[in-house]
Length: 403
Image (cartoon, rainbow, N blue to C red; front, top):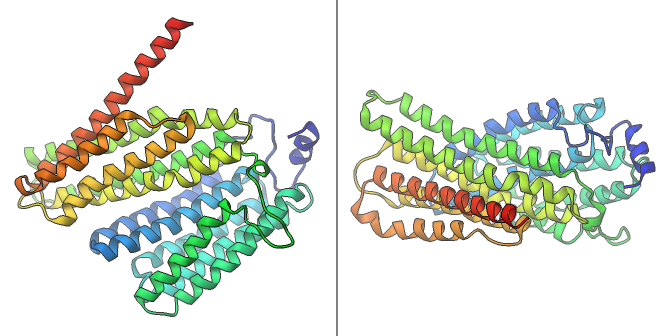
């Protein structure tokens, strides 16, 4: 952006000032907005644990994708709009209340709560996009047109969201998947609208620091849910003996290792890459909008796995327990592969080997108990983090020696 653009943004009633130290700062209003998603993640993990089946997994995946889309779309908006300015702050508070209603509807979204879920989701998506198009119309008309196109696409998807709320469970799932497909495909199509043209990633100059920090905070929320699950499950036990403490330590190690893999080896690099890219919108769309989906889903599934393993550590390992214990870390590592490949241009070998090792644990399922499988998966995950740490440490040492 030019210096004239920076001056226009600085005096705008809603836009973030550019070219200042405050450009990438996460506002307190954004952190307050995130509180709703603490409840949302809890609702998602509890609903999945209570209805763990093939259909339950599909429904949970669909709801997770919908919730993530609401959150990440809001993050894109607050990358450009300043939450410290009154109109934008009001927008976040309205979205926060609607998000509360959305979270309440999650457990019964495919039953009696379907209409509440659809109405609040549609209101958040259309309302936020229309508001952004309106407040940008004078100071940033190019991006206002982008959001006009986005609003039209959200209205199109709203037809399927609302239609799904008035039919039975299976038909609802089908219609909502169509609606979700429209939401997810539209950015790749540039939100093309006849007569209004299409957007390009060059139209989306973003603050990498802000985008990286916002996504990192959402990952923290998800990791926090695994801590809550661990604490709540153990607190409900009648006896806290040595075995339980060891299993508690394994659960905490698993959560801490996911934090290590994500924050130590990807988050900072992504912010730097976006800030120094000629097309920051392209990297932000790939690394944050899409690649974070399996990261978030993997953490939620891992929280469910911890609940299963801690609540019933002994006995045979059934399918739902094995799939959660193995599947959670696998999905999490797949997301990190995608994320890190988007910013580094290559996939970490440690993650690929880790996925293979986790999948190989499936042969042990008939011969082990749930706690043993859980501890083995945690050990594999820790091994992945240690491998990546030593590998990157060696690479950086070689770079210094070369210089």
